[in-house]
Image (cartoon, rainbow, N blue to C red):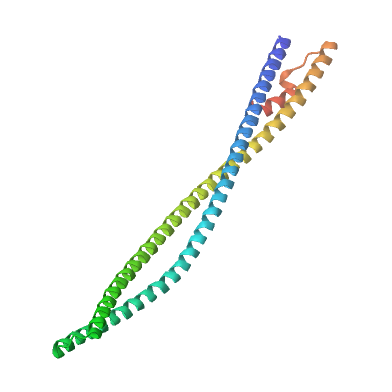
Length: 238
């Protein structure tokens, strides 16, 4: 009866060892999976860091170009405004002069060839000045439109940079969580390995004791055997 009991205990202990080994292998598989996820996260983080650096570089270049363009456009606009003012004054002066010439012509009623040519020249200059004024106003309008476009592009770059930065912060948080999980699994793996070593050692000693008892026709009491107690304790039976 005691021999049957001993064999039953041995069978239970062997089954417990198989279960512990499966748990150990499951921990190893989980650790491998987490390592792969961590490696993928690190690779994705590196890619995002590279994209951020590129976007920051593009952003700084765009900002520098915009500042330079703003300075140049401000100078161009100032020059154009000065020219418009000068041309307007010149146009007004020519119109006044034309008006005076017409009055003089009407009062004297002398249509000399010189006066006619001067009148034609003044009218031609007046038309040219009006055309130049219109061209300058159009150029000023184009400059303002280009400036607005550059401001819009700068806003888009800022939004893109903020989006990438937010994504990078979220990925960093997820990586920290995975690191903590991996650390926990590693600690559990070490504990299970230690248990396996103790159980394996106790099982070997128990087998030796059983063989010795068999050869000497002795009976081993499973309730008072230190090896069985040690294995039961590691397996959490008590």
